[in-house]
Image (cartoon, rainbow, N blue to C red):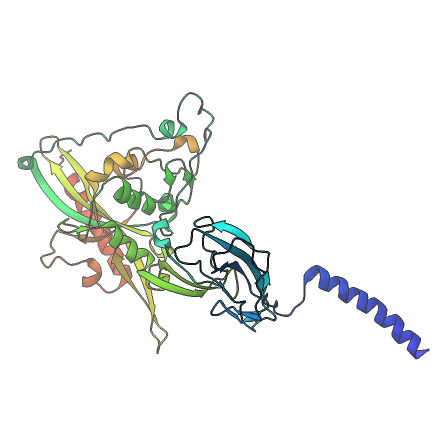
Length: 422
């Protein structure tokens, strides 16, 4: 009875194991396939009649040489002969890793010089290639495909281009001329816009349309790359910063990876060189959420009005470092590049701003900056600052720095109001 129970138990287990192994495969590492080669050997004697079929004891896959190949047969064509006999061969490796096999030859065929090109190298030959993946762009340079139909209800792709309908060629309005002799008051202010705040979340909108990536940082990078807008290293715009330097700062420098084996064909040797970005030395895209503005506030006595003009704009990355001993985290800021704002206005005048309440109520980025539909904190001023330092260099307490920025804002407001009499 015990034998019967054991047999009844083993039969379904064996069937289940066989089915599972056939469907899902074995859990062991797949076995490498034996090598294969084919080619042509040439008869070295000028003969009218066909010679006997060649033979050989073995074939070495490493040197591609025969052992005891039949007399007058060689792997190369005879020199100076216009007609000769050839025979094709094929050979499989006897066992994986043995490196040799027994060749099989076909019947000789009369050939004309030039009609039989040299055999192609086998799959085990070493190929060489160089690939530069950095040309495809980094995380902020992704290519957004264009819509082949209209994106909006009013688009008619048969009559006009929906891309042109979306991006109408509109130029920004010129600023009102301000004569310097009429300046009764002027002050420079540096202001940081934090895109993490709810009022500023349009700067981080990760949408896509026919105009490309909607993130404000991507708009700035595309303006530098495609629209010939210059970037600079400082807020005085004295030294130009090229696009390649900006990208290497964000994505990290180029690094070279060399592969000795094809990952898609195990056992096949290659010499592939692939250039990629070293992301470990780059910046995290999520850390670039601050945009610094350089503004000039002017009170014009001719029009009796206080004007605010943006001079430059700069994305700022926040870098967090952790002390290996104390595990204390410290943050620092790094200015990526400065753009002279008047150079950017014509581009921003056609770029739409995301409106979370209604897609029909979108404006342009130029209108957003001119209407001051953003919030920021003042980090530097030219008023009573002989050493030209930022507030954080003068005040260590973060709360007091914030209050000092509000004091600067209040002072300018009070100055304007004090010029009027009621």
